[in-house]
Amino acid sequence: NAPHHYALPASLVESIEKIIHKLNLLTSSQYHIYNNLLCSALLLILQFIFSKNIDIFENTPLWMNKLSSITLKPEFLNYTVADLCRELNYSNAQLTRVFRLQLNMTPHEYIIEWKFRYARSLLKTTDMNILDIAMKIGYSNLSQFNTLFKKKFSVTPGQYRKQNKNPR
Image (cartoon, rainbow, N blue to C red; front, side, top):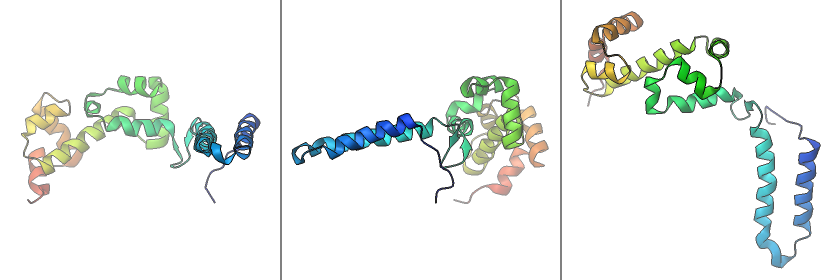
């Protein structure tokens, strides 16, 4: 009933059959080997599945899964498009194409979106100085940060904080 299915290559099926045959030949005194052989068969199957370009559990391209893990790193706030290209092993043109196709935005827009998402979170949940927040997401100029924030959210960071501050 799974939404995906893969035809296993004949060589993989043969390897698994050999492992199962070995399992059938074990005597009761050799059952301690049983788990190791079963794990070997399972690992062969999993290795095949994960070598595909699609994550079967999410139906998501592997580059997007890697991108998700990259965004969790603290240093992601200082990433450039070139950094993403290097991490995801794409040229700038390729990366822009797959971002537009999958996310309907450019890699640069994606990075900016994450930076401002983090800034909004800090504005809501901390008493950090707005300049410190701006610097944390890569803006050394408070005026530029305020201008971009207001353009994006129609309010200044200070107004956003007042409107969205979580009560304690």
